[in-house]
Image 1 (cartoon, one colour):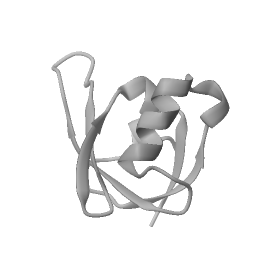
Image 2 (tube, helix red, strand yellow; image 1 turned 30 degrees about the horizontal axis):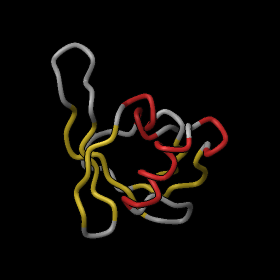
Image 3 (cartoon, helix red, strand yellow; image 1 turned 180 degrees about the vertical axis):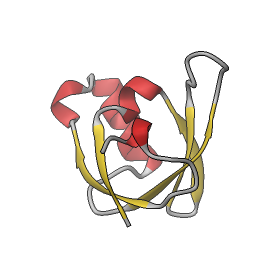
Image 4 (tube, rainbow, N blue to C red; image 1 turned 90 degrees about the horizontal axis):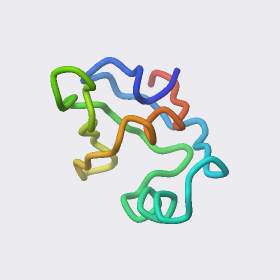
Length: 79
């Protein structure tokens, strides 16, 4: 399952991040926000009425917002 498909308030473990498909700036930003394989992530809110973009996620003790197209590159499994 991808992070953009994860039901709200359902913790999951990050299995894989498609680093090779992210541009340098986006990859650096995700790393700075703490995204990495093996960590627990939880989708909290979806923005917008139509696009549901961005997605607010809890990663560790932080809540961050990431774009839906970036979340689609993150594979997760339910915790």
